[in-house]
Structures are given as structure tokens and as C-alpha cells.
Image (tube, rainbow, N blue to C red; front, side, top):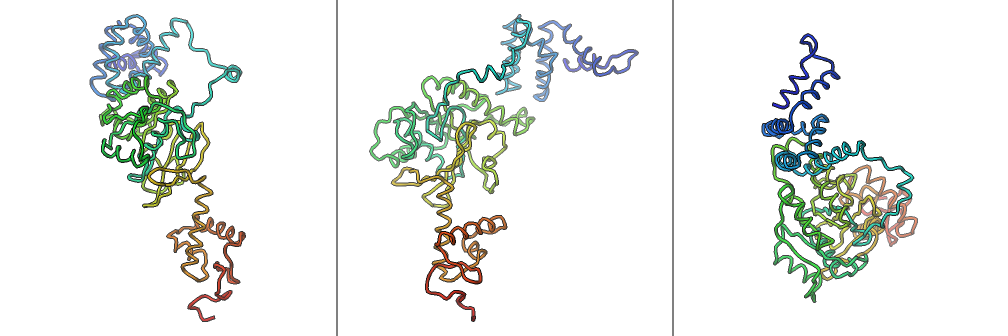
Length: 432
């Protein structure tokens, strides 16, 4: 059909020989430009119906110029038949594709493309300050809040939602902008949410600015339209969880790389949140395996992390009450905050690195106290369940700091001990 005609035109050259690339391009443009608008749309529709993999024709420059012409001269044909097929083929990318075609159509009217902005003009422009809904944690745009299953990320999100809705400090530390908040709970029902709200604030009764939804369309099935509708009432929207609103599996989705798919899907939400100057927070999971870079912790492709403006990664070990909330952002300061569960709600304890260092040092001192003997660094690490050369170098620094602060002693043999009643170099059980 359309591709066959194009290929046929591209294959015809002088004396039947295949022409050079430039001649093939000219031949293709000649065939496409010679078609009537209705004929072209019909051929493109047939081409797209054959296979979702044929959507690449929509991005070929010669076709895009004709689509811009049709958009300008025959809107019913463009927005009716053509855009309906484009929506099926491109799904969440259809709006971005239409914007590109609209730019081409406008450029052809004006006889020019948009003028690039100069650095001087950018620097002279007065831009509004970044809108922060929770200082240091939640700002306008798209935020991914990620953590391991059953480790409290939904509880943390609900705690923040309640603070935002009444305008009080989140975690008894971070100022908030009082907002209308929509919490889309796609995994937890009324009973669980009611219990958690009463745990967070036992005397709660009328937080009028906090609303809940228990059903929401998927992306490609009305999610963006729903966000647009609810954005008229709510400034902050939590979606728990991201996996429940991702597009369903289709052949077209399989043809995309995972990175490209996540960029397209989340890019639409990010652009909408930025345009509305609102905060949309989607809750997601992190990998089970440890990673070097915090951004790699979010499960799946880096396309998720790349499409978001901010990321919050929450971690808590076992049944410990204390957890670390890591902030990774393009606009906010990257920080690590320690939060502790106190009487059903989360409270700020301190900056992460300082707290974690103190916590680790306290564990070392406790081990030396329990063992009641001088120990070398590998023995201390084993007692803490930690192995690896990289950790050994860090432990050497930690032990040196403890020794410098006079919190532990060191024997002549280089073993570390608490100040007590055992001999300088006497190790229990060793006859010397």
C-alpha cells in the first residue's frame, strides 16, 4: 500500500537501476505529494491496520508535511479518521505527535519555524519560584515514591497527604502548603485506610481537603483525561500504585524498548503536572538487589527515573521503627532524612548520613560490649553481618573515628576494645 508505493517509487531509476539515496528520496516525495489528501489518508490507514510496527511511517518527514497540510485544510479528515488511527497506533504518544504536526502546520502558514530563544532572553525572563507543597520533599511536577513491598511507603504517603490537607508540618518537621489532596488508592480499601488514618491521628474526624478514589483508568484508557478533570479541584494527587495505571500489554507496546515506553508513558504525566504547576506522586517499588546508585533502585528501566522530576526512596529494615527517606531531584536538594514511627505517625529524627553514622557506631560499641574482648575489623564486620573489601575500607574510617573520639581503645596488636578491665593485649582464650 503506502509503503509499497513509496518503495516502488524509490526503486525506479534511470534505465531501471536503483537510484542513489537522494534520488530515491526525491522519488518518494514525488509519489506522496502527488496523492490526493483522501487517497493518502486511506493508504496510511490501511498501512497502520496491517501491523502496529508500521507506525514508523507517521514519523517520515515527507508524510508529516502532508499530514500538516491535511490538518490545516481538512480538519474533519485529520481529527476524525487519521487521528483516530494514530491514537490506536501511538497511544500515549499520539498527543505529542499531533503537537509536532500542529507546529509544522503553523510554520507553513507563517512561512517559518519557531524562533529559538536566546540565552540573553532566558536570563532576562522572570520565572515564578518553584512551588513546594512539602518543603524539601514534594514540589510541582512528577514525583516517584518508591520502596520495598510492605515497608511503609503507602503509610508514609498517607501521612504526608493528611499533613498537606490540614496544612501542618509533615513528620513534625517540613512545612506544607495547605492543599486539596486526592489519594488514588488502588491496592488498599476503605477499612485499611480508615485504620491507618486513625493510627496517624487518633482524634481525626473532618479532614475535608483529603479525598479518596478506589478506581482509576489506565494510561491510554482515560488516565490523562481523568487527571485533567481532577486537577480542577486538587493540587496534589497521589497514585498508589504506578503498576495499576500503566497501559495494558499490547503488540505495539512490545515493539518499544522498555526505556522508550516508560519515557512516553510517564512523560505525558510529567508534562501535564508541570503545565498545571501541581504535584503528582506515583508510588512504585524498588529492586530487591542492592545498587550503587540510588536512582537505579527504582524497579524496571531508568526510563521511569528519567521521566520524573523528583524521586523519594524510602527504606526500612525488618521491623525497625526507623527508616531513611532519600530525596533525588532536579530542583530540590538531594538529601537523606531519617523518620521514626512514634505513636502511629512518622517523625523526623535527623539528616540521614549523620544518623546512619551514629547508628552504625552505636552497633559497633554494642558488639564490643557483648563480646567483651578485643576484636579486629573483620571480626566486627562479621558480627554485624557485613562483608566485602569496599565495606572494610569504610569500617577502617569508622573505627579510626571512634578511636579518635576516645570512644574505643586500641591494643598494641591493633585490636579494638572498650575501655574496661581486660589486659592490653590479652585476648580471652589465647595463652599469651
